[in-house]
Image 1 (cartoon, helix red, strand yellow):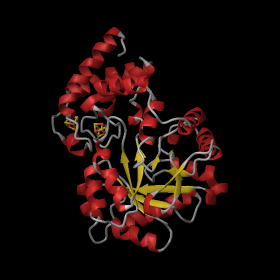
Image 2: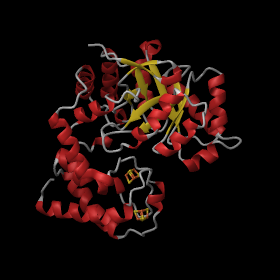
Image 3: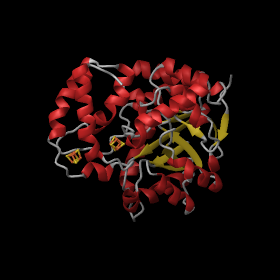
Image 4: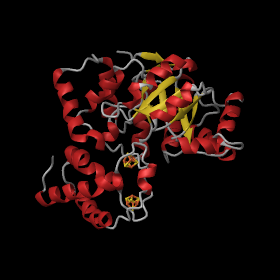
Length: 348
Ligand code: SF4
Ligand code: SF4
């Protein structure tokens, strides 16, 4: 069955309701990465998202899509704060992606703070407008982990034609105001992290939950294997109504992960004593649930415990966490729980 398409706001692009998120193809071999992207294309996915910051992702995507460039939409993004940096990033991205234009160019992970720099004279904002005028970027957008920031920017009528935000059955904030504001302003909505960064019990249920929201134009789960691509495409082709069992599994995840949900974005880093914060916050309820105790997890748990004990209580991580998690409170709690599980070799 052909994937359904939705209009990506005022860009007018007709994108498949599920696109391809390019983060995970950095983690596999280049051969596998190209195979995954090509399988997406064969199964009808027409929207491909990557970023200058995702190491090899752009290059691999460029290789996979070279022969079909005019049949797909390619979006990338840049963390650049200044006009000069943004232009340099653009040149690299075009080279990596083997193209001379982008369907969508986005400012990556903007916060209220970084927006002040980006929006100042000589900042990346004025440059992205130029890049659009030149036709190198056919459309422009902004990505952020802050629904509040995005709601403000969209509500002010900024020239961005799309937003990207994390949204899933635990991170529900975007469904309160942001997505409906975007609909009203005709701004396209791209949804990242539908699987909560891998923390959820059932990826199928998580994908259905987001796809069922008609204010979400294009959902871009990260996929790193052909099997995952095929499974997700099958979900798109089936009924999006959640069964009683699926609704129950959502409630179980909500109860287990609640307000302590760490999206594994690692924006809280660097930590001056090298604490792998997302590892501590996520291992018990995510990694162990999925994979049990592996040699790697045992080793990292043992190495991490003394680092957590040496936390300086500086709070720098909390100022950077887009989800305002009380990291300093959570770290010792989660570390203790993990050590107890390690001693028992138990899993939740
Ligand atoms: S409060 Fe602790 S965990 Fe957070 S940045 Fe400081 S030392 Fe690292
Ligand atoms: S603690 Fe916050 S910033 Fe760090 S990985 Fe988790 S969600 Fe991201």
